[in-house]
Image (cartoon, rainbow, N blue to C red; front, top):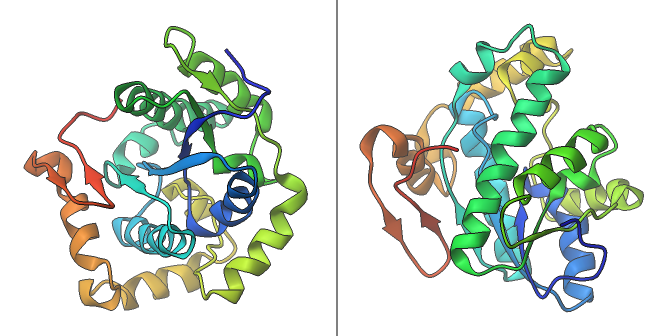
Length: 229
């Protein structure tokens, strides 16, 4: 069911560090037990996935909240849908929200939501629709927050703690359509060395996660050996 009351234990899908800032401010002010969930196979190329993971890690550390990391960059699935328009976006929301619902059910959360709700550039109606489908046959609630009024404040907060703020949505199609394509491509080349990011070891392991079929657990991070939903 869609939930309008505050959840007790929330698994928050996290698309990137900057978009998590304002939602976390509000959720923690409300005293909600929140865990971040970084599952974004829609972020391409792999070095960009690593870059956004790095910033999500910074946000988790900044607020002192736990974070689950799962999956890797999967451009082929999005390239196959390059001509699908809004249906490609639907697939993107569906893939991520169904995975967060599975994780929430397995780990005893009572509700899920997503930091996508902070962005005025996302298709809120599609997110609501796919979120509702994700929890339809599960004993979970989907919390339809509207954090858009804090989007600019969140971006300012991200800048204040030195977060990378991306210039495209995430998938390889949106990158190619971006007016920043050339500049972003140059940045990706410069970041191609793993050691350029402090979480490079974690991110490198996560990138090979599907092919290597391995599992790693620590106090703050969990990467599971499970197929992408």
